[in-house]
Image 1 (cartoon, helix red, strand yellow):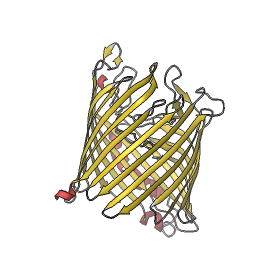
Image 2 (tube, one colour):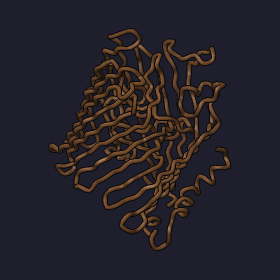
Image 3 (cartoon, rainbow, N blue to C red):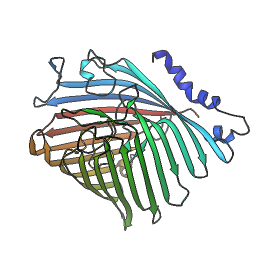
Image 4 (cartoon, rainbow, N blue to C red):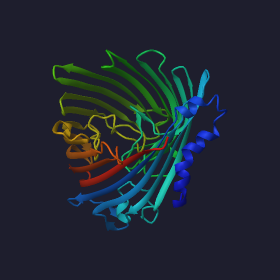
Length: 425
């Protein structure tokens, strides 16, 4: 994709809607309920490796990973045609331009990296998904930004990760939402290609391609939507299978709102076990307390078994309560806890300004020939969203992070991310 594709990209949503519109009469909902936004994302990334843990690229120590990109994220979602069964189309147009970054950008994961070690000047892709809806049941087929507890697309760099597949979502019973489907291709956040669904076993085994990723699950909300119970099962065929049970609850107590998020993962190898014997369990819990503009949270996460947390290569670890900017604390046998505080400066007369600080500590890590390794991270995010005027909804985020490890890389990192959503339709 070249620079001349930017204009066609901006027109892609409206063009796609027009192509599938059967007639003006039957397509009223298709157009009237359509939403098209163009997200402008500017992303600066700077990582310093400390204590001699920097990687070596083509015989040279990297020392630092740095990159800067300008990104365009077109999100066009139609409504549904009228009739018993409604049809629609979703289009996600993604394009990224490198503003700065050379060999040192190799570990930023902002851009694809060429064989010579240089970051690509630009990359992009288009994800299209058709959808059909009957009553409160929707079938979606194609490629999109999928976020499920057992498969979460990662949106932590220039462009979001997407998966290609089919998903059925049904909400026919009040409070109960059922899910089922299959994904067969993976487009990672720093890649324009579509690869097989795979698992990165690390070590000498490395990346292992599986067959299709099949999943089913259900979430039941009750008690005025204050309580949710979720049950999920997934299989990356011939690699691993994983089950997940989750309970969340929110409870007002006087001036406070107390929250709980409890979960249990159970994973093991599946089918022909291409990645060998796998064994992983995760026990986790997060307790929160919110009063006024302050939110306090404490978490605990414990892994058991000989394997790290099981997830598709490149996918987010966001379902883990201790997943952060630099680490998910998901090594074999790792035990970790976290303290977190969020503050909304609206309480001081500055609406749109927020601050997050968290400290996470992990121990008992079985890696690198050790059974007692430790790690810790300290992460801060200061964010501001403009509340009114021409630049309303423009969001600026500064993330400052540190991590220290007995096994792995010691890092100091800064990210500056500017997002500006433009509503086209």
